[in-house]
Length: 64
Image 1 (cartoon, rainbow, N blue to C red):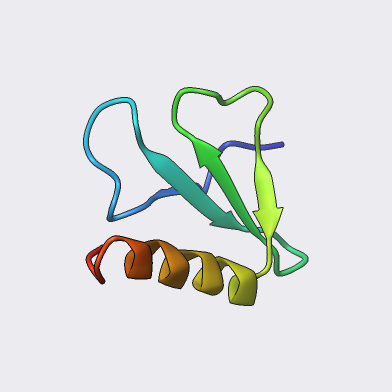
Image 2 (cartoon, rainbow, N blue to C red):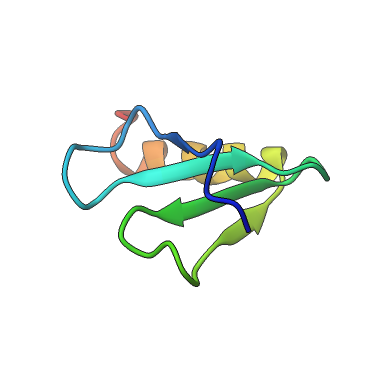
């Protein structure tokens, strides 16, 4: 898998705890952690990712 075209989340802090996202050719959204380029890539759909982000925001009192 090519590591080009990954975009760092604007909500990630500087340093080693960054989340990168990329849209794959099949329309799925790929996520990876900045430290682990080799193995761990999560794949989900845009609707499911939106639901995850909404749930996290709700749990954190609506802040992103």
